[in-house]
Length: 232
Image (cartoon, rainbow, N blue to C red):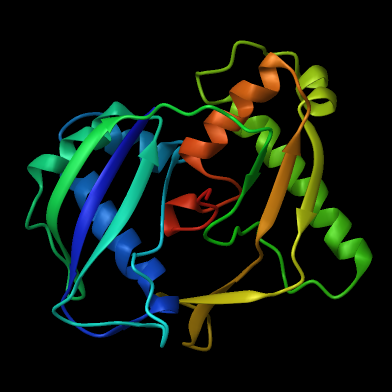
């Protein structure tokens, strides 16, 4: 597991809800230029196995300011992301990489994790308990298969992972809508991701500890490569 810390220069005022798309574009630009196997892993895998944080410090008025510098943390199971230190100056119209440091990631689980950026599960806004329960069930399955396909799993007993890893999942009530302006609907409007924060509690066993590590590095839910599901 690996951690990359980027100093990001904001080139134009950017609303916090738009920062997800701008940062994901910058990271995909690196992936496309990387001459190792990272591009193939990203575009041909079910899970990306990397996640990244919001820009810090967070602005109270929700506007990241042009000319200011912010820190973004990226975590991954893929060693290739360490190459980002050779891509200082990489830029889009909105953001650029000013500085990068990287290291191996060491994580000691606490038995629970909580999202820093909200997670997405292809869901519409939740309007009933049944819809919330369905979202939680889908998230459980996402966790199971994120672990089993990670290459870090020491246990491939799907029945055990399903029943003995996650003790409980809590999903918050607050809906967070994140637009991606470059992903258009048929009517020409921006695609909107309907996201929620979540907290996951684990059973106390070795496999659960492994799963917690995979999620801490790779994120939780779908579209972590868009900035969703980063773990606090």
